[in-house]
Amino acid sequence: MQSRNSVTRRRFMGGAAAALGYAGLRPTGLLGWDSPPRPLRLTPQEYDYDSFAKLSSNENPYGPSERMMEAMNGAWKYANRYGYPDGDIQQKIAEHHGVESENILLGAGSGETLRVVAHTYLGHKKKVIGVRPTYLSVFGVATGIDADAIMLPLLDDYSQDIPAMIDATKKNYREVGLFYLCNPNNPTGMAVPADDVRRVLDEIPEDIPVLIDEAYHHFVEDPAYETAVPYVNEGRKVIVARTFSKIYGMAGLRLGYGIAPPDMISDMRTYTTGSVNALVRWGGVAALEDLENERFVRETTLRLRKQTTEELQAMGYEVLPSETNFFMVNTGRPAAEVRAAFRERGVLVGRDFPPMLDYLRVSVGTEEEMARFMTAWKEIMPPRTATTTTSG
Image (cartoon, rainbow, N blue to C red; front, side, top):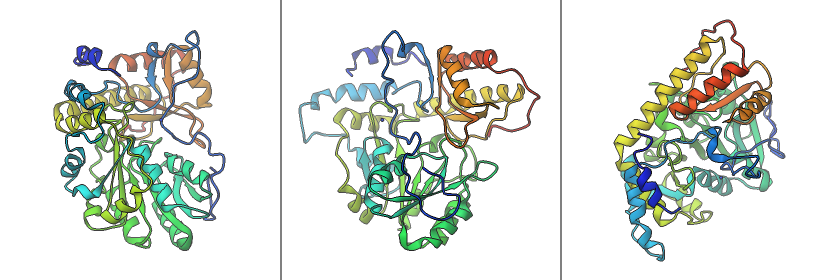
């Protein structure tokens, strides 16, 4: 399956402070806030990109499907045009979700959607409610526009503290500009049950925008989870962010979107760049239609995640329950040391996620890459007493 589009590819030319109370804190100096990963600036002697097993950025290791590549190749004829046919990508996304075209805002990856939302609803001393650790793109924007952040710690089981987030929102109501929920959460991989999402929407003031980041939606198996898209049709003040980077393998091509009520879409449009190009639009249409490839990526990813995490647990290492294409494993020592040892063995794994500095985030790669990961793990990490923690 990995070589299914190799010929087509050759023809194709071608990124805080944690508030433990409820006082808003400027997220100045956020450690490692998340923009799309950038290439490492090293010499070829130091860094041979293609030789590494890349398990650091939660990417789809298989890339666009052959059907997507063919669609993008066919769009080169529009490269010199402004007003070109785009496969009606916005309408296709709307139909996919059971909403109207006016509910969709395209962006260059969901990262652009998150930044657009932050610019729209935050400002001088406005507060964004969230947790730490989580995906920090929104908080990075807050840093640059003099907004504040209330970032609450995770619970002891590393799930998001929904009651505390609701309480913080109510206590700071007049200053809160945005409520952010990454579901499933990055970096923990843990999902928020649908009942808790509804609780948020029912209990916080209804005029506060709620941004729900569903970048990893396609990998969730937990029956207690549901997408928040139906709340958009209810007219709630909700923005759901989605991306083509994960299940569809378009991380380097950049395509994402927000789903929201039309008045919110109108407010946000001011901050968009219109940077989604012709090839990417046609690739997105083909991705939505290629259900066979979506199934392959999902099933293969979940199988390899289960296989790898069970092997780690058999060696005695705790693995957090994951509903994504990555997982977190407790290393029992600074993850930075372990990460460096993996790099020496040609395997790239995730960065630090304070305060979880003894947990390593590992993306699920190909079968060959996961075999390389486990070989390196056994060289670096000694076996422990077996743990009963499940992997989800």
